[in-house]
Image (cartoon, rainbow, N blue to C red; front, side):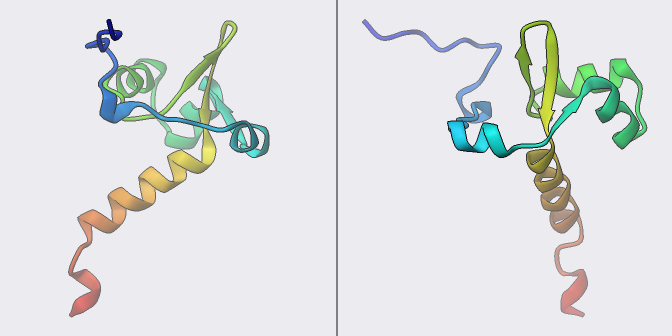
Length: 87
């Protein structure tokens, strides 16, 4: 029988990273991300739990991929300003 999906981690939020991407990626620590976003640790935790920020845990350290966070911010900005540049 197949493995049942974990309801805490929806399939749409699953991220597959290959070895080359991981090796070439720049990573934020929690403290780096808090400074970058200018938000508290609890706000960052909420975003991670809601799968709004990609992250992974390496041993006891949580890291966030900088390039994916930048892409998410750009996508969000572009979707909010859709049609703005058409004027």
